Length: 293
Image (cartoon, rainbow, N blue to C red; front, side):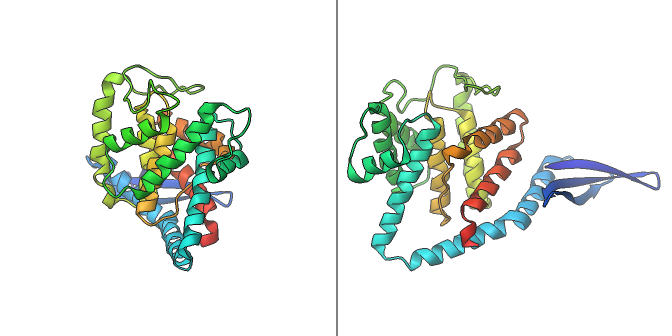
């Protein structure tokens, strides 16, 4: 977390921006002098300082993961690449849908998507949404144009066209609530403005590290909550679009980690601090791909 600190030296006040972090059970800090007075562009300076910290602590490791991931991929025959992508699609579909309440197990999802064996005594909605999620996933992989709200509406419509026809592909016109959360999603009257602001921000994507961009795309878009249902699934697809198009391995937020995932999103929104979710995402991503380091 970046904060402003004051130091009094020989009866003079000096201001610093300071980043504190915990490593191996100990609290460390790094600071940067900003002047005797707090500058008008302090928020910009804080963001630049945070970016320096991320570059130093995280981005070099993410780039090493990317390099080794690409080297490993180049050694694979095309058939193995296809199989690996299919395995990822199953695991990603299982976890993303399970987080949202699907009753299908990982094995049932795999048999359904790979062998077309439908599980007995499971809701048809869960079966159709698993099938559609994989279809949208491959649509995302093949997408070679810029993402805009029309793209996400198209994915949303495909994902829910057989199960939630009343919300499929529609920006909500009513207030929604998140069960168990004190964070209230934006009112429908604010959605057009917030969606425009999001994509105006996203246009500057090339200025950000792709893993950082993926984390912020997730946090910012899911917080807007533009759809009546399915915001998490569309956001996780968008997140993986960013990673995949920039050559980084895609990420799976696993069902078993859903509590810490929800908590990170909640705390970021309640405290208006995007770094809470960003750092949670960085740690999970690093753990997910530490074998490439």
